[in-house]
Structures are given as C-alpha cells and as structure tokens.
Length: 178
Image 1 (cartoon, helix red, strand yellow):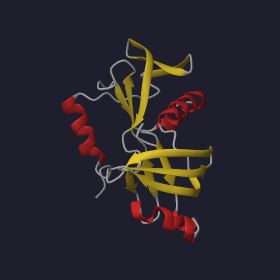
Image 2 (tube, helix red, strand yellow):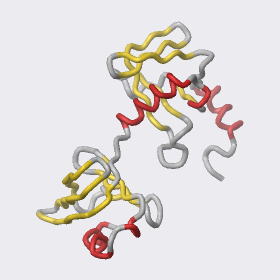
Image 3 (cartoon, rainbow, N blue to C red):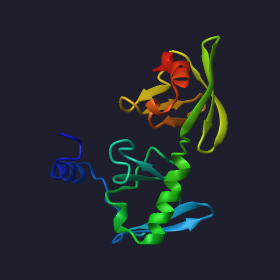
C-alpha cells in the first residue's frame, strides 16, 4: 500500500492536525517579481515557496506551500494542482522548476576521487558541468535499478535517468558510486 492509497485516512489526519487544503475555492496565487504571492482565507503572503510533498512518487500532486521567510511553517497543501486555472498552474510549475532544478546527465566525461571528494565532469541537458560531492556520503541516491540522483556539496541535484543508456566506458567511470 502506498502512502496515498487511503485518502480518507489522510483527510482524517488533515482535520485532526489542522492542515489546510488549498484549492481554487480558497487560494489565489499571483506572480510577484519572479516569485509567487498567495491570498488565502483573508491572509496575504508576499512570497511563498512551493515544494513537492512526494517528489519522486507523486511529483504532480500534493504540493506544500510555505511562506518564504519561514519555510518550516506550512500554509497548506494543494492536492491537485490541475484543478487551478492555466495561469496558476504555470506559476506553480515555474516555482517548482526553480526549486527542483535537476539537470539530466547525458554523458560522463570523467569521474575523479581525491582527498575524500569525488568530482564528475559531465554533459547535461543544460550544458557541460563539473560537480563535487563527499565520497562515502549520501550524495548518490538510486531511485530505481537504472535511475540515479547525485547531490553535490551545494545541494544541487543531477540526474541520470537511465544508466544503461550511458556507454560501457561511462558506466565504468561511475560504477564505484552505484
């Protein structure tokens, strides 16, 4: 059973802990200088942060909305962003793209370990880049048998959607991390 299979349990938890559901009926998002502002039930937030509650399993549902100046506080949850009008969905998508910027690795040029740090030089769908991470850390996450996420020292993420699509030579360069 997945966390979302029993929605009634989720709704009961929502009521008991006071989670606010955001929908077109009670929430209005507007652009605000490259960010998003929110008006909800008489409250105004000049700038909000939009996060995925389940980024890998439900990336298009369950968005958490938080004030930019206090991201530990949750304003509310959007269960179905597709219920909002096209302009609002575009604004939410734009905010998610800023937060979850994850270039896709297309080619591995080199992978070097030195003094406890690893550096990968790669071609991505956003251009060539080099990123470093601490060896032996939680910097490499396998999402499936073929999908891998690297998290660098700055917290930026780089994805290999399918390691089997890399050449044998490229796979060998990163085998130690997988």
